Image (cartoon, rainbow, N blue to C red; front, top):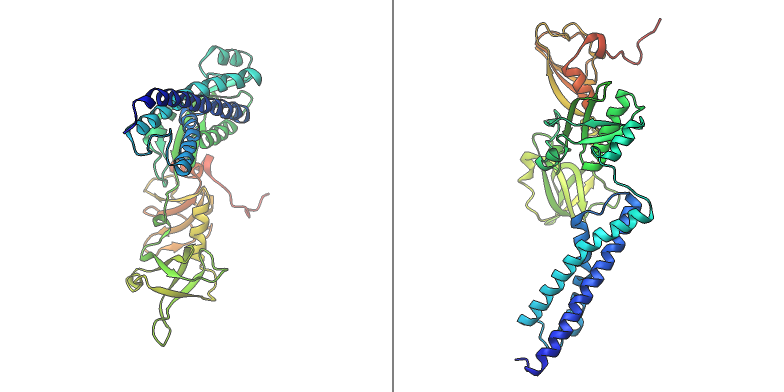
Amino acid sequence: MIPLALVGDWTVRALVRILGFGLLAGVVTVLVAVVHRWYSRRRLAAGVGLLVGLSVPSAWLYVEAVTDGSLVSPTPLFHRASGAYVLGVFVAAAVASVVGRRIGDRIARDVYDIDDVNASGPAARLVRAGNLAVPVTLPDAIERLDGYEPVGEATRARLAGRTMLFPRRLAADELGDRLAERVREDFDVDHVHATVGPDGTVERFAVGTRPSGLSPRVPPGVGAVGIVADPPASVGAGDPVEIRDDRGDTTRPVATGSVRATDGDVTTVAVDADDASALDGDQYRLLVRPDGVDDARELAEHVWESDSTVTTVSVTAGSSMVGEFVGWLPGDVLLIEREEPIPFPDDSVTLQAGDSLYVLGTPSQHHRLADYDPDIDRTPPDDTPTA
């Protein structure tokens, strides 16, 4: 029990410390908001400001609890009064952080002459009146890019109907590229395809994201397994290895595969699905195999790292692609499915009704291929002779 004579003094000291922590959190948030606005020309996010403000008293209280065993002596650490004190510190720090973020942002805007231009406000109208900028409004319905994972609903809601300002003297293609680049940077979207008309109207806008995790990179019939092993120092992702079991008097091979990732003594290997069940998690030894480059694996890695993706296109009777050469199509045709499939067809192969094409290309190329017009979208090969 705490003596009643100490309650008044304890309360005063606790309140003073709570106010002090609130002031400290506010000052730190002001400084961070000023630096962020000066460096990025953007306002510090509310969540980031709150996190910055709360981190300072949190670290201070943690050090006090570890070193002194109490927060406000002589109250024990695990006491209702200590809990009320910690709650008061966090409330004061949170309020001070919210206020400090706004004060810091205001200071930075006044000191460095930074102004926010609303795309629909009076400042934006003055800019447009001086032929300095053109507004670009995104459609209300955000499409999904074929061949890519969908973007989250929250991001699509933020993009729907949004108006952005761009320099007026940009051509339609340049304006589309600038729009796609800005959406990728500001909204953390992996892939964007934007088509803008000569009048600045967005004719098509689609977004997609790169699949995460290991599963999209594992081909059919193959399983990825984590095993305890001591890989050679120079082994890396994609290296072919032989997994050997050293238990007993002899060393026997268990499976062959390729390295996907390493983390200390744990190695993730891709092996045949039938061999995956033979790996029971015991200690193994990895032997790097002197195999040549696996063309299929190398192609898959290049596709994964690039902005391109593979989609399928069906050539129907009466389609504008019937009778076209493969080399004229946007993108790279990897496979033609017909009675006798043609992998990696030559540019001179003629398309027929009923063909199914597997095409590797960028979002722009896939869009042109979906609405293929021979007079517009025909892409001559690089080695086409010219008159």
